[in-house]
Image 1 (tube, rainbow, N blue to C red):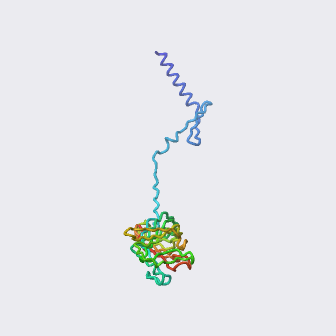
Image 2: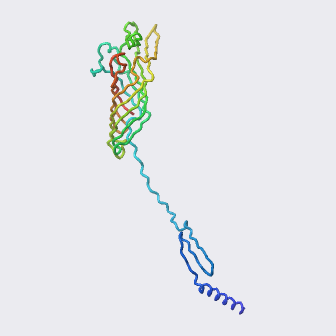
Length: 277
């Protein structure tokens, strides 16, 4: 027992002498690595970077971009009218009065499918364009005048010789539209929730037109539908103005050119007034 105690003490003294007598050198290197140089040995101690880093995640708020005001996209519903050039009256004169409209049946529908904008100034002023479809119906008030294509004279003409009384006398025109507008919004923080005003032009191309007549014959309702161009101007341009608040807008369009080609029909200008939903 005495021998074991003596050996234990001797071993402890020896280890202490070795450890402290050798004076191990400690060197600090990059990346938090500690190097021990002792008795010809090189001992590397690496720190775990994952345990030194704070585990808290800092979330930075991402600001939500406010959308620009909507000036064009949506559905427009309104009433159609016709004016003689320079007259600015819906009471048409001469042969043009054969085109007097029944406003109760002369409606327009605009499906404004796409709207694209370029912010010009602080989301208050924008350049607006897009794409839409336009459906216009012109119901003529005359019950005994028929519109027809005069092939010989290459113009639109009116047949007043009929003894029939038409219950429906209507021209339908379908177009593709592309607007170019300057839009102004009065609400900078939320442009679509304030007063909105837009002015500009709308270009259109007629891709379909048809004329419909309905009348009674032997107490039976007869309907005739004829598809033709009716000397309509295929490309047209109209001035437009739109004024609204939030999601409700009023619009007015006025054609800068005649409904018919030059010299092939009366010089009458279509106009439209309605609401945008």
